[in-house]
Length: 235
Image (cartoon, rainbow, N blue to C red; front, side, top):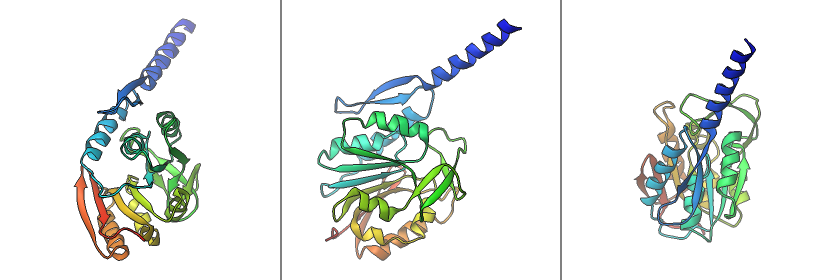
């Protein structure tokens, strides 16, 4: 019985190690390599990020960038390579994602914040709806996840304005954009993945907030993200 139990444990450990085995991926057109966890959604997430951002062409060079819902940092890496003069703040709540995020942005001008964005401070819980490592959702219930607000993050990015805010927070954009959005007055471009498919009202909340904050803007799409660029940059 002891041998059988030991064999089962070894097989379990082997499966876990296989799932967490790291593979290397190279950002197209560069020598920059990033890590992905074999057997997880990481590889698909990398391909999606590269495809999305290849279609985004901002009419200015952002000096500061917020990557909200950074997952393991692929967008932060791609944006850092495209805009080498930008300071990036990457925000991610899930601990195992944060560990790989820190590794992927090592030696790049990226600050990592382990937290989830929310309309108010405090703590939150984290749920796994079964979408893989890039689909965790926050729940408005006291838990182990620190909550930060968008005004805090915009201030943390430094400077008078933030050139680009990328947001992919699995439906929590409904809560964030339904609250105080005066921070948008200090933002020049916004790229948001909208999740009306399981939280109806996300698109309406974002569109209303942008229209209220910016007198004029252009809207386009990049993969699953809606991209808003204000016509007159913030003063």
